[in-house]
Every structure is written in C-alpha cells, then in structure tokens.
Image (tube, rainbow, N blue to C red):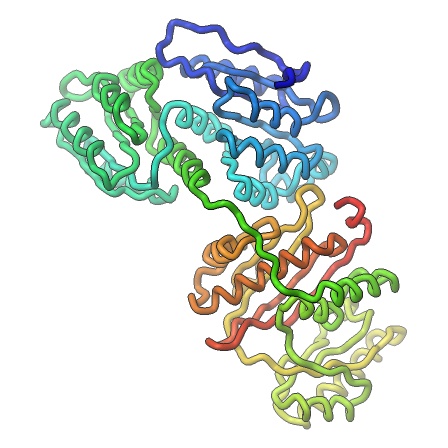
Amino acid sequence: MPPLPTVDRYDPMPDVPCASRFAGVSLLTHSGPMGETVATWMASRGLGLARMIHAEEEAGPGDAPCLALLARHPETRIIACYLEGISDGAAWLAALQEATRRKPVILLTAETESWYQQGVNRELRRRMPSPEVFHAACDRMGALRASHLQEWLDAMLILARAPLPAGNRIALIATGTTLASLTVATLRDHGLQAATVSHPDWSAGSAGLRAAVATAASNPDTDVVLTVITLPMPEPLDPVALLAPLAAVAEKPVCAVLLGGEAAQSGLRALDQAGIAGFPTPERAAAAMAMLEAQGRSLRRAPRVITPLPVDAALAGERIRLALQTGQHHLSDFEARPILAAYGIAVPAGERAATVEEALEAAARLGYPVALQLLSPDSRQARGWTTRYPRLTNPAELRDACDLLTLRFASRIPAGRMDGLFVEQAIPPGELLLMGMQRDEQFGPLLHVASAAPRSLSDARRQLAPITAGEAMAMLAAGCPEIRADARPDLAEVLQRLGQLAGDFPEIARVTIAPLVVRPAGLGPVASECAMLLAPEREAQC
C-alpha cells in the first residue's frame, strides 16, 4: 500500500489501559480544529484513532485520493469524513464507492439546506453539491450521512461497538410504561420497529430487569436489544454486569440508554470501558441504531444492474444538435417532445397548424377533445396570460381559442415571432406527477419525482441517474405514495428512460415534465407538458 499523504496528521494512538479500546476509526477532515476536537472526544469515549488526514481543498492530494487510501488502510475499520467542499465530484464518487464496499463511511458536511439556498458563499457553493444531490449520492453509494455533529459522533460509537443487525426489529426493555411508550414513538420516527416491549416494574429490581433482557436477547424475532433504564434504581444496578455477558455472546447489537444524574453518567462511562454502546437519551440511541441498521441494509443490497432500454438515440441526438446549431437552449413543449418520444416516453399525438383552418382540419383527424398551444420562440415572455388551452370539445371552441391566442400574442408582443399553432389530443383527467432531471456540476444527472398536487418538488424523491427498476419503484413509493400500485411499473420505466436520456446526452442540463398524467389501467402515462434546457459546455465537462 502506498504511504498516506503528508497531510496525515497522526500515527495510530498509543494503547491505553482500557479493555474496550477500539482503534479502527479514521478521520478525513477539511478542518484541523474539527479533527482535533473529534479525536479528543473519541479518546474520552474509549475509541482509538487509527488515522486522521487533514485534506486541504486548495492544497495537498485532495479528498478523493485520501478517501481511497483509507479504504485500503488495513487498520481502518470505519471512515468518518467531515467535508466543506468536494474538489472533483466524479473522483469522489469513485473513491466513495470503493470505500463503502470495504467498510462503513459516515459523512458530515458543514453546509445545510438553508445555507445552500441562501448562497452566502458562492465559491463554496461551487465546490459543494446541493444537499439534495449530495444526499442522493450518499444513498447510491451506501454511505451513511449524518445531519448534525452529534449524530455523526453517535454513529461512530455504535458502529465501533455493535455488530450489524439483520433488520430493524427492536427488543425494547424499559423501566416503566411511560418511558417505554415514549421510546416506541421515537423508534418509529427513525424507521425502527419495536417488535417486543417489556417494562418490568421497579419492584422486580435488578433480577427482573436481567430476566427481561435475557428473554429479549433469546427471541429470534428481534434484531437489536435496547435497554432504557432510569438511575438510580431502588436497589443498586451495575449496567455493565447486566449487559456485558449478553453483549459478549449475542449475535445482535446490545445498546443501552441510561437516564438520570451522576449515576447515569457514571454508568455510561462504565459502558464505554466495557465496549458497550451507551446513550443519554432514547432519541440519540434511536438515531444511532437507525444508522447501524442502514449500514446493514446497504451491505445486504443486491448488486445494481442497469439494463438499457430500446430507444432511438440517433433521432434524439439529431434534434439536440439541430437545436444547438441554431442557438436554441430553452426547448419548449413542442420542441422537447420529439426527444422524449425518441426515448419511449409517451407524448400526446398532435399536428402543427399555420392557420385556423389547418387547426380545425388537424382536430378533425385527431378527434375531439383537443388541446391547443401557441408556438413561438418568444412565448417565454408571455407571463400572466394563457398560451395553451388544455381541453377544447368542438370546432367552435377551437376557433375561438385560435383567435384569442393569435390576437393576444400580436397585441402584447408585437415584435415577436409566431410559428403557428399546435393541436394535440387532450389527455383525459388523471393523477398528475412532476418528473424531471437536473444536472449537477459535480455529480451529474439527478432524477426527481413527486405528486403534482402541491406544485412543488420540495418533498420529491431524488436519485442519481441511471437507475434500476427497483430504484425507480422506490422513488415512486417515497415521492408519490398515493399513486396506485398497478401504474407504478410504467411510471418506473419512464424514470429509467429519462435517466438513460440524461446519461446519453450530457448536453441536456434540465428536463421538466409537468405534469406527467397517470391514465386509467391499461393506458400508459403521458408527458402532457414538458420543457428542456440545453447547455453545450457541459459536454466537455462530462
């Protein structure tokens, strides 16, 4: 193995008289003071530091090579990264993929969603992907992402001290019904299931607690044992004597929450010495166990297999090249549809018309009801007035709509260029989705999908393209759970085709389908309205 770079700040920490010393955590940090602070915390909790690399963004070997070196470092069992930027997104993703195949990687970033949206430091914004893109990258690579410093530290602690669970079923033993109820709710909030709940009465004393813990540990239908104990108890209780024998033989994680004053703090210190994961609140324990479960789930995940779908890439490429040659970057609904259709994404049948009479003839061929839209490169200036009628049921309505669109355009944009009208089949009402792709400068194309009801993508499910069929189904389940089950396979295919389009043509910076209409059973979804943004300089970047 090549030597670690010169920014390597520490040799492995010397052994100390602590039986639970775990010297397998390595830090990759963009902040020297942060690294010093975390190293001090680790020593206080009985965690030994294997390596710490201070990777400067403007100097040194960069974060991706350092991560790759830690992935191959034999003494490193867990990698914890604190990032303030990413110098090379593609290299970082490759290094992260290699690292997560070998050992857990826990990530913490300095930037938050509100920080990024405010854009207080545009240079750092350029170096750090948006939070939504970074989160999608973490999910794709199987990395663990902490939302705040305490969660990051607790994740290190539990990964160092507990084996990976087989699932999310928690055996909960709490001293009291109220405490049990509160903990069950907290577990549920973190995606964990309280499979069994035991709350021995205080009158049972430590013997009753030991019996409950032993029963929970032997239950084959549970994956984690969690004890929540208030101290002091009526009779003396040694948490190490209670849990250490079980942790030594159990094949499932054993964790503890100790509540109270000095007795609880003393008990947590004793658990650290014994190598058992202990926490001062149920909330912190639940968050840490969710991280542990996510790591186990990631390792059980089947290998990703991307199967290309049949498409007409030549036709789509010809349309894109023609648009770029003529200086078009914003493709309207009419201009973007052939590209989507070439990739098997259904669009309404339609015809272009230069006059009202041609529009009427086209509607007769297509069949009523029809939709009508104005074709003009200047239509983006048409803010606040209608340029599209979604449903016209007879020739009289169509004629009136044509007259209104042409007269309004001529009066409001007299110097504008009008390229005619577009008549298309009206799509019957159905469930509506927002679907699209946004290309990130660092990590590439990001797919998103959400219900169109709130007209917002703030709660959308996002994934880096390309995606598998299973990942597309998971996106739909998370982003629009109300969509009926029989429609999801067709919608998942649309997401896959959109991801394939983004991968084939890096010139496409953004695709928006708003809305995608989910039609009745037996009829596939249709992209009712769409738009596309082209950015030729991205071809060189990618």
